[in-house]
Length: 528
Image 1 (cartoon, helix red, strand yellow):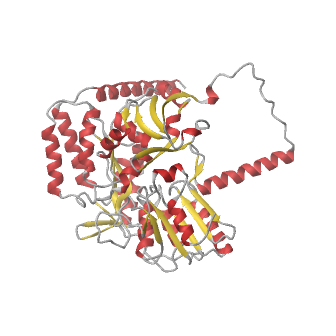
Image 2 (tube, rainbow, N blue to C red):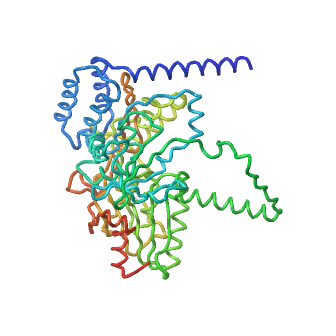
């Protein structure tokens, strides 16, 4: 027992020392030698492992950009100032899955515990950027619903347009696409603003415009309700004792809800579901799949149940809404596609990689938790063997076999044979674009909306290498696999171009009109 107590004490002390050292490191100015070493480290890691580094920029041009960066940095810089110069150079690679983040001050164990007891209502807002207007599109807080639809003029007295234009320089879409930038900066604004400022804030003031009224709204971090002191004057509500039958019914309801949440991918922070299915209209002639992401939950059961309902209702039109779906699991879109074709298919090619051990490289090297690194090395014989069995070499290229790259994949027996519409926008990215590419190339669907943010000809993603630059502590992640469908477009560096181009306006949002969906319903002569 004494040994365990001593070990815990040593670990806590080591953690405190490490936290203090890290915070000191990111607060100081780094000399030119340190900054140049970080630049060289960043470029070295990309050249070593990124499979399509020169897809959208030539080696000559990228070499020049990194060399110019070193030449133009002629004085010491703090980490965040350095980030503002490094991020645009990495963004010039034009690979949307590369993310660069400045370092943030680490908290002590005590500070972390306290922070878990708090919430920040600013993070419960959703935004949308339309017609050069930055709108609050949703508020997942229980109060202040009236601010939805308000236009953001400034954040902490800084014009929102200035924040947007500066932030756009620090990330990229896939290739030469432009719709992604405005969409994603609104979709992930809390995180974008955090990177923009380089410091965690517990208070943010928005200047808002609603119709002709301009006002200010301040968001502060507060204690969660369960940690606040109870009002002693309020008599607590006594719990009603349930009968055995009521308890049984309650347990059944709870089990059902848990199963439902898992299948639909419940998003707890927003009380929304990633996967949604319903029929539009009384006659069930149009089925509507709204998929916010391909991430959590039991997607297999969800799609099986949804397409059983479609078959039972003899529905002849299906709408798949991929707007603001930034991607997720490759296996999920592979499964979904099997319900949308009646032909044998190959969903994606084997993934191109720069290493024969990509999973091991991602799990055991770079900026990952020590616990993950420890177990990765412990099980390295299994990981490396698994990788080597999956990879093959053809010429100078290395290819990784994916479960979704089989050349003779079968359509699901419940496959839908009717008419398909797909709703897309600039936030239709990564896995969404791969699914859309397959549907577009096989003429299986009519696309409505705006060009996808993800590329038609694939993307570098799959599994990720995380790199921590040793001096500035800037972190960046990039994919280790080029994942692409067998189909290609001659428009290099562009997304899926919709058949019907519709971009919502500010007026549409204020009037709560969905012009893309309305176009389809009008086309099908079907109303709500």
